[in-house]
View 1 (tube, rainbow, N blue to C red):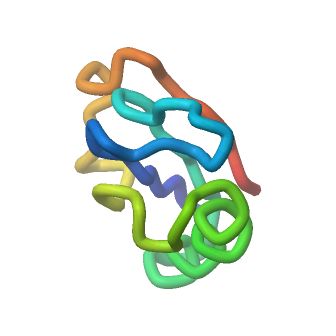
View 2: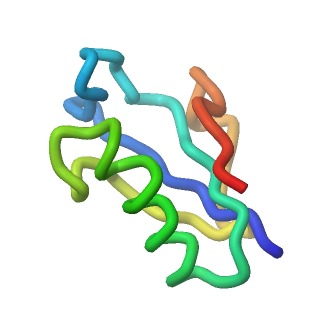
Length: 77
């Protein structure tokens, strides 16, 4: 299993108004495509106003935690 990170832009908020900028959601999955499917099913379709209201998906090797000062919002395993 691998870690995949989903990040958010400056205008991305949860349905309840929580600002997601500078934070990430981590998904533990077997591969890149499955991680995206899990993220959409278990997070963006539930907590965001639309399933595409997030910025980027990163693999572990390409993710720079120091760029996201609010840190990890949620882990989906």
